[in-house]
Length: 127
Image (cartoon, rainbow, N blue to C red; front, top):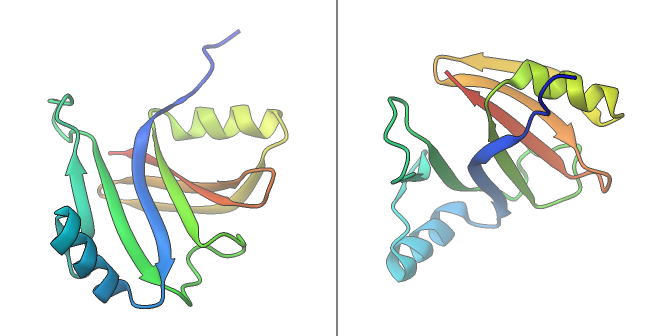
């Protein structure tokens, strides 16, 4: 039997907001969240010294975003994974609901799954 796939970290935390810019500015002012317009905030993993080191992105989205659809939740977590294809195959065999959509960028590959309550989960395999 092959090794069971697991996530390797949290790649991002995304949530809906009535006023993403004002809310992001509040987090920057009061908590020091290093927010940049159009990018969100990026937290580098201090213990990951490899090229393309790990990071977690924090970002407020407009309340009417369709990016989380069809999830009923006002949030979405992005999990970093080592082998997206192997993890998706494993979850498919376990009956996990998998979105057929895939996206590939120079910074990684993305896929989406749903937990038993219908919350959309983003999976990211960095390049």
